Length: 201
Image 1 (cartoon, rainbow, N blue to C red):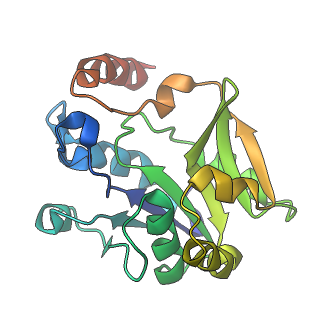
Image 2: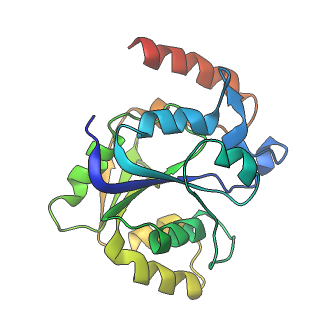
């Protein structure tokens, strides 16, 4: 685990939480801490700066001590819009994207994705495990800012579709449990048991 200069992380916490009674998932508690706090702990030694993308409960997120971004000037129509806003506002060479509801986030995620871009042949690196692409665990070269802005204005909204159109590389990581996200309150107990395992390993 190496802290990488010129790489910032954007934590996506702007979802509606429709499958969790519209709770703000980043602020849901796990083992006494918010989900986003678990993510921050696993990221802070990997990147130079951390930003939080949110569209509500700004006062609560402000308490975490990291800069907040909203989707402006783009519409709040999914994570790709939030990513576009992040790329247009965050000064960095590469931007790491992660969701707020994955408290088991790999502590070597940046190293994995960064290696995929270091050859210079690709502009996006994305995690794939068990043949399942994880489009919200990706690293994007800042040179794609204008392209993504153009695609958003053209109506593109699916992150995976946009990534497929770029020069991208898929990084295999079979540790599926580390990318598990919380979609329902019932997932909390399962994730809590996995959290204990990762701490002890």
